Image (cartoon, rainbow, N blue to C red; front, side, top):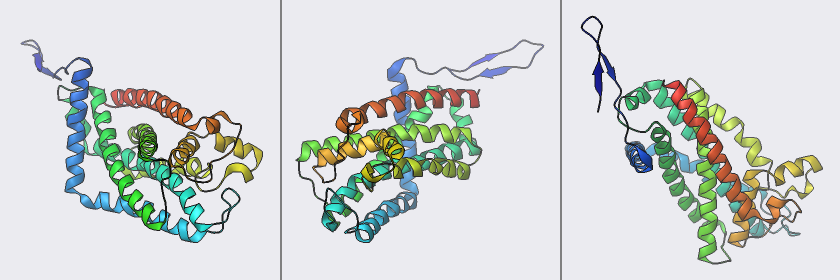
Length: 287
C-alpha cells in the first residue's frame, strides 16, 4: 500500500506502493501485464493481420522466385528448396517480431504509460516480461499461420510430431530471446519510429549472413565462420534437423554439429544478458 510522509512545515510526499515480494508475485504481475497487451492486440486486429503479410510474402516469393535456382544438397529441385527454405523463414519471422516489441515499449514510454505502472504495487521487471510474453503469444499465432502456408507450397515434416514440436519450441525460444534485445532498444530511443528502425537495422545482417536462405559453404571463409557461429544459424540448423528437411549444413563448427544444444545455449544466454540490461535500463529510465 502507499504511504504519505511529511511534516507540518513541509509538503506531503506520496511514495509509490510497494510491490508483491517473491517470484510468484513477479510472475503474477507479469501475467497481468501480458493480459493487458493481448487485449490491446485484440482491439487492434489490423496490427496482427498486417504482421502476417510479410512472412507469407517471403514464403511465396522465395519459393517461386528462387526455387529451382539454389543448390540444396546437390539438387536444384524447387521442392527441395521449399523444404530447405521454411526453417529459415520461421526463424526470420520470430526474430523480426523484435522490431514490433521494441516499438511497442517505446510507444508506452512516449505516451507516459510506464509512469502509470510505476504508481502501482508491482514488480519493475514485470512490465517488460509481460510485454515480451504477449509478443511471444502473437508470434506463436503467426508461426501457426505460416506453417499452414508452408504446407500449401509443398513444405513437409519427415521426422514425426515430437521433433516438430521441439523445432517450433526452439524457434519460439529464439524469438523470445531476441524480443529482449528489442525491449532494450525500445527503452534506449525516444520514439516508436526510431525503435522500429533500430530493431531492423541489425536484424538484416543477422538473418542473411546465415544458413537461412543459402548454404554458407559457398561464402568466403571469414563470412562462412560468422554464419556458422551465428545464433540464428544454430536455430535454423536445429529446425531443419528436427523437421527432417534437406540442406542441413555439414560443417566442423560446433554449433552446426550440435545445433539443438547450440540453439538452446544461445537463446538462454541472450535472455540472461539482455533481460538484465533491459530491466536495469527500465529502472534507470523511470527512476
